[in-house]
Image (cartoon, rainbow, N blue to C red; front, top):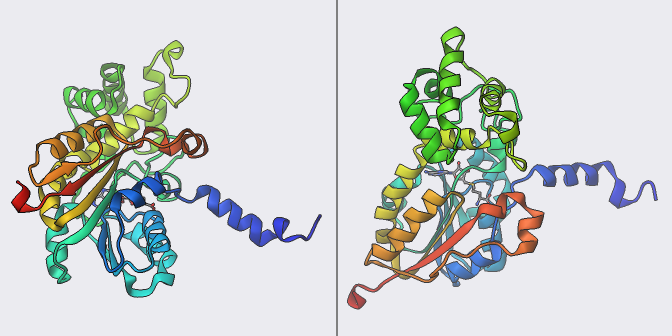
Length: 317
Ligand SMILES: C[S@@+](CC[C@H](N)C(=O)[O-])C[C@H]1O[C@@H](n2cnc3c(N)ncnc32)[C@H](O)[C@@H]1O
């Protein structure tokens, strides 16, 4: 069968690209959750590589516009080329989602019909950004999603400068890592001789801090520490809290807010905000999770939790 379309170099290239491409999670649940309507205006507040936006416009081409935000310029460039076929239906904005209210004002858009947030990083960050997000690569230990912010703290700054106590707390809280104290102490010992500058150096220090017999079986021993540093560097929980305060005022009455989180602390913030904010009515009592097939085919989906809320008419309050 040589020479068939299935084995051509172009197809192999496309297949290889697809393998490393970010696969959007819980697409059909998100599309239903947003309750798409013709003429509607939506915000993809974490545009990433545009997977969800592409799915929205394919499901409902009559949507008037999607405003796509991302705090990472490299990511935005890729989304722009992927979504070019949708023309000016998608507007691309380099911004942190905490500024959504101002972004809408600046773009002369009033309240919108729905906002999607798919939190965290994309597979581009792990595999191609060269910013040290992954313990399985040797790259500068940066981990900033938005590297345009002048003077923003990097992961290398944190591991080489934070006091051991603070480092321990951070790894314990954001990484839910039981070996946090040992890891922080080993990092401290190591940095007294030479700073830790790359992801591979850090991964090695962390792996050596945990007794071999306690190495987790399914994940790399540095997974939790890397996650903790990424959350801290990008102030992910602070930004989510700020966004949860300001987003409801960006929605029309009956507008939908869909949030996919990957960390128990994030999901807790979303759950509490949906329950306690009287501008919102939660539509999911418990978070939705991917079906077993999706969990099997997309390992990143395994920890995903989707919560959906609807904006309430002021009269209903
Ligand atoms: C999980 S990815 C989104 C993937 C996207 N749904 C897709 O299907 O391609 C999350 C994206 O949100 C961006 N991001 C994370 N925090 C952000 C924030 N506070 N403001 C704006 N963008 C943010 C990241 O740069 C990343 O590209």
